[in-house]
Length: 151
Length: 183
Image (cartoon, rainbow over all chains, first blue to last red; front, side, top):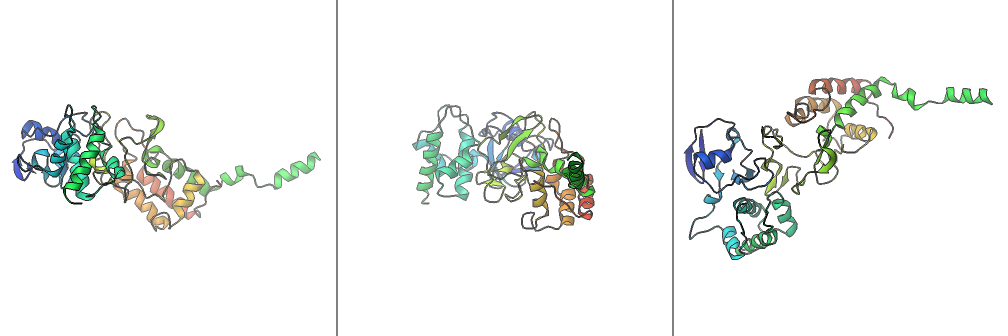
């Protein structure tokens, strides 16, 4: 089956039931989205499908409707996404394992609410767990990204 | 004195008699469906879906700070469909799925509501999506997300009966005057 990932068409030879995360990591070699819990309970595998955040570990390939965006697709070296820039300035990451998922949820939030309140941030980010408890820095980075884009 | 008491008892319309009314017997079957955790968990009064039912133990608020959002489909950046896909996850403890997973509108409250309260809501077009009872019956029979309640997948207790049986029961209840119990 054919997917569009980060703007590139990709041919995937897999069963329709295969989770999108497996196809991305094991077949397409796109390693940004991480396997955490495998049951949509931690958020490490979050990607965007048609602009909406999805836990790719539980989304079967046969149900992917729209272009897929992973953390590799939102910016590139020298031209990072505002959220990535803010993450660096705030030094959010500790171990870093959950951070790709955190950033993708933050991107989805800012796409719809350019200047989110603390409550908006909590409602979106509650599904992305961080065992290093970087939550205060995540919140600060989202606010920094919002400010940097002129919201 | 004893004779007077017996006469008074005979004249008093006791609740036991009222519950034998055929329409109320039909309603009791419908109430068992609507109040079942498979249905009521997403018919809540507040912002949160619930996790409850025989296999959950005590009722819990859906974790991850999941909330209703402006339209019942969740909030920007974390909608119901962020985790709930069109089918159940096949993985143990994975999220259930059905098309258009969402919370029922806030005025359609069933969770921890009495039989009489749920009955009044079902009949009230102002709180049932502007539906006639015939339309409510068709919704119960044909809606994909409602149908999930009777086939929730392994490890989850299904709602009693089936979509078709519930449709038929609601039609019979409507034909019997759609009576509601007290309370």
